[in-house]
Length: 177
Image (cartoon, rainbow, N blue to C red; front, top):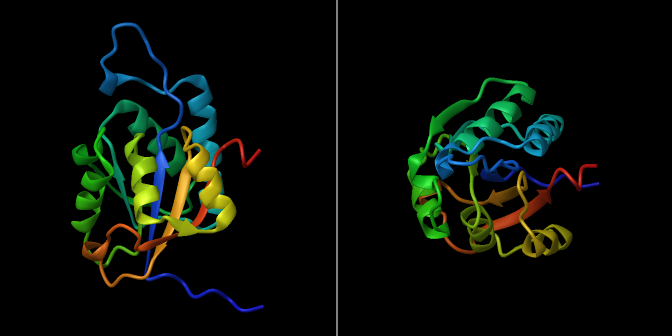
């Protein structure tokens, strides 16, 4: 069995877990629903088990994204640097790429916790190819708490562009049982 070489950089895109729609709450203040509070730790446990530990997490300021990250982070085996990233709240895939390009090259594994359609569109833009099953499932639906793992053979994040990534895997809480 030949081992696949580690990519130079790895991008993990996580859509926030299922949120509630409380009456009168501004979009940015929507909390996780019960289903979301159950799903986020499932994804965190999976990330820990698969050693998908980011060096840096960029998290949308929206309450549902912040709550998702807190529940995921608890399951991880090491402390992860994190930054609130207002520039990924409800933005286009191109804007997400602009944010990624500003990440320092010493960060090998980057996690972004954000929203659709931005997460789905960014994943499809960066990694139109990859594991056939993963690509098919991701194109079908990028549900809440969906996790796309994209490998990149780049020298720095500033080189990220359409088609530069390979979708290594795509998982959802449902696919994990």
